[in-house]
Length: 202
Image (cartoon, rainbow, N blue to C red):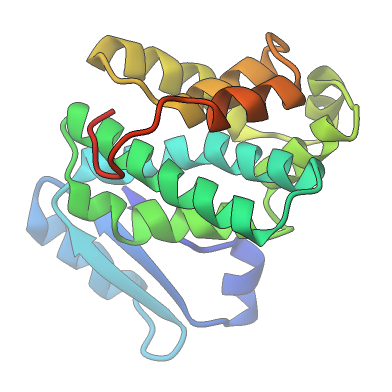
């Protein structure tokens, strides 16, 4: 499984890019690493955590939709940076509960890919969040482009419930996509949650 912060257009341009390839069998990952790596353009790291790499690559998508919603509501970098930081914590806890490793989420397949999709205007997930906040309906947006975060928002919430985790950012993105709440309610609910230690478990 290959994942990490790598938009195809930037890779084709030759921008230096780093990704990670994961396999239960290290020898297989090393083989792919040697086949794909380029000394100046494309660096591949290996991992023996395919669960974490898959979860990081998939579940960062609804969080990027949330990042687009933040921009669409007119909030600035303070809000976005805080949400991405807390989102990475939720992603890490969910990954561990599903059998992955925290170090994977702290690497290219987790926080690396999360930053790419949350900060870049090229991200379809981020664009989706902004368009939703501008008043477009999700069905109309999905006619124009594929948005992985819409389907995986439901999956993330289901996984969280299965693992007994309280993941408010995943839950809020899912609720907004499902039109169960409006944006103003989402802000109030998130900011009004009980105060706690930063590293308290979810």
